[in-house]
Amino acid sequence: MASELQAMEVPGESPHFVRSVTEMGDTRDVVASEDIYASNGTKLLAKGARIDSKQFEKLTRYKLSAPLDQVLSSEKATDAEALAIEFDRLLEHEGPYRQLLARAGDPRQLKHCTANLRLHSTLELCLTVMSDKHPEMFVHTLHSAVIAFACPQRMGVAPGELPAAAGGLVP
Figure 1 (cartoon, rainbow, N blue to C red):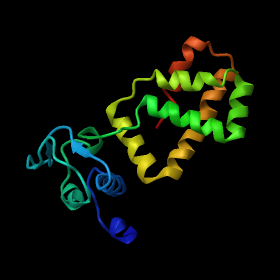
Figure 2 (figure 1 turned 45 degrees about the vertical axis):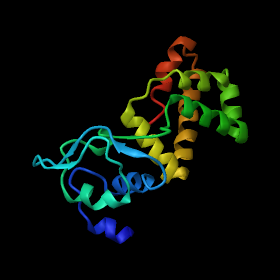
Figure 3 (figure 1 turned 90 degrees about the horizontal axis):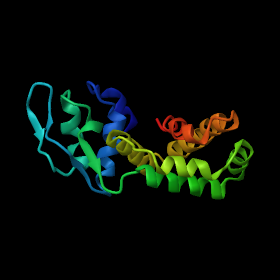
Figure 4 (figure 1 turned 180 degrees about the vertical axis):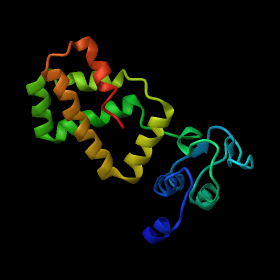
């Protein structure tokens, strides 16, 4: 499969992302949030179409008129509330990160700031794909985010400005 992905040239889309999101569609609902068109105007999938691994070839054969992550949505997306729960779980089980936040300031502030973020649907889809298909990358992202959040907290950034710092936590 890896050699298949390397050999295939996908104009404008990462074949790895397309493979991951279509495979994710085999186990949870992923749907087209709007019609999906090729750059030549050919309609590939209608709004509401279920996306799964059967659509991989169709979605990689053509250059798309809009990035795939902007025209898909998923059930149970990793939104700000889910992200805050993941941070809470990480801090409960991983002492060094809990200690880092405790030394930087109030360790509960990360969860609070994250839960109040308004994430764009594109970011929610990317986080959902990452947590579902690449959990080790997702955990690494959470670890990096904890460190990135602890820095401004330790530097004394006002609590009211920390949500802006939390906005930079996610890719």
